[in-house]
Amino acid sequence: EFYQDGNGPENVGIYNLSKGVNRFCLSKPGVYEVTPRSCHQFEHEYYSYDTSSPSILTLTAVRHHVLGTIVTDKLMDVTVTIKSSIDSQPALVLGPLKSVQELRREQQLEEIESRRQEREKKGQEEEGSKPPVQEMVEELQGPFLYEFSYWARSGEKITVTPSSKELLFYPPYVEVVVSGESCPGKLIEIHGKAGLFLVGRIHPELEGVEIFISEKGATSALTTVFTDDKGTYSVGPLHSDMEYTITAQKEGFVLTTIEGTVGDFKAFALAGVTFEIKSEDDQALAGVLLSLSGGMFRSNLLTQDDGMLTFSNLSPGQYYFKPMMKEFRFEPSSQMIEVQEGQNLKIQITGYRTAYSCYGTVSSLNGEPEQGVSVEAVGQKDCSIYGEDTITDEEGKFRLRGLRPDCVYHVQLKAEGNDHIERALPQHRAIEVGNSDIGDVNIIVFRQINQFDLSGNVITASEYLSTLCVKLYKSENLDNPIHTVNLGVSLFFHFPPLLRDGESYMVLLDSTLSKSQYDYTLPQVSFTAIGYHKHITLVFSPTRKLPEQDIAQGSYIALPLTLLLLLAGYNHEKLIPLVLQLTTRLQGVRALGQTGSDTGSSEDAKRQTKKQKMRRT
Image (tube, rainbow, N blue to C red; front, side, top):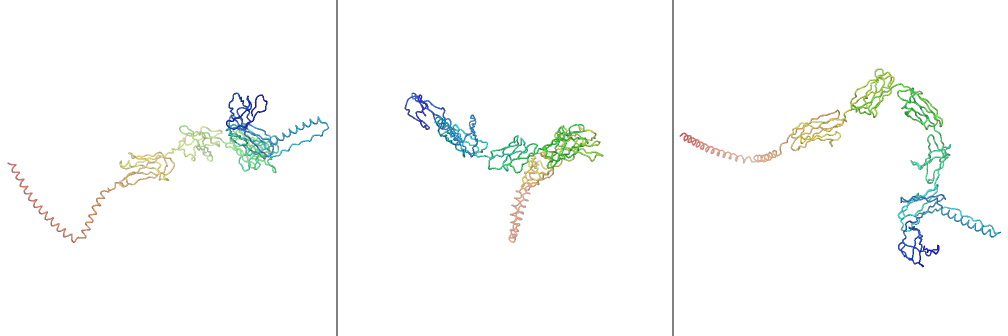
């Protein structure tokens, strides 16, 4: 809309703008005021344009109009909360909103009132006229439409959440993102339906009762409320298509459902009993076990440091109590009591000393406390039928209760339950019980060494040591050794310590000597990890096998010789004459050789004789 100064409020032109550059012709020169009317909100409410200094007006949209509607089947208060994704933008609460029908009715009422006033004015001027006709407004009928809007920035994400005292909304909230490229229009549409209300009362009137509403079959409560000063409560709106369970509770009361009602309860005030237990010298007794039972109630609790113990939330009826603690007898020792509704009883009990305690510590040689050690007091002579036991605490302290006066006891470690203890010093402490407690009975203990050492040696030649290793297996798993020791140059070996667990083990000697060159047996020894040490001796005596080359040569000679003998036996008729002939020739040759030898020998002798004669001259 274009307005020109001095021409009054009427506009001089209305133009539709599109995105981008727009051109217009103005009929007159001068200064104009440009006011944008759009679903977009711009940087300024209006802009000025002077024809004497023409320029381009730039209109930049900063917000965009988002519309939303809520349709309900009942006329109720409706509030809308709009939360922006922009942190600096606070949440906007709209409402309570008025429906379109309500706004139309208000407009009709205003029009009727205006016409009435106008008729009254005319009636005064025209006397004797007929009375005016009474106008009626339309009755409000559903469904009812609620409209709301929001100016959002481009790219802004908004969360719209409707609320009402009696309506439930579907969906319960809507999230939309505004792009700003075009008019957003109606982006939000929500429907509201009348919810279910659960109303109840406590009889008699009781304030502060906690009411739990949960969906049928659910393990946790959907919502929780408290009754008001009149004992009433109201929960809602809830989804009407669901089934609900209502329970009630209040400390000190029993609440039961009243038959024939939904959500009404009958309240019964619970009773309480407080016990005060003191010794005969008026000292509070702590740690007294007090048993209280009656009807379906059973409880066993210990008195506090002040000797007090309170049982609360008791239903009216009869109860039986009995105090118990070693070294004391109590008066009354037990009793039946009657408890009325809402009554709080206080009962005093006195304890009388009948036995005494022995206090002490158990520690190691370096003074560290030993926790969990079983200690016992064993009666001697006439008191041999009596005995008490206990266990040391985290500080190594113990207390043996119930020791009878005029008895002698041996305080010692129990044989059972002290497997980790090897011995105690002293083995026992003798105490005589009088009319007071006994203290400073201290015992020093020595722990069991839970270690098993395994060592051994191998008897063998030193040349084989580098080929040997000793392997340790558990008897139940002979596939995987748990330890392996290579001998190297030493005949002795030692394994890492084992646990004294009584398990069965096996030690096996292994060698890398070639089986094709040596014959040997690998020794093995089984044992059980009992005691503290085990020493094992293993013997390794390999023998070298006959070389394969000598065996092969003997085999090669034997085969031809055997064949020749078989051939000679088969052709003996031809072979014998040849052998005889060969033998005869050999004998003739041997005779000739002997003759030559004799001749030569005589000639040599002669030469020797000549030489001797010549030497003489």
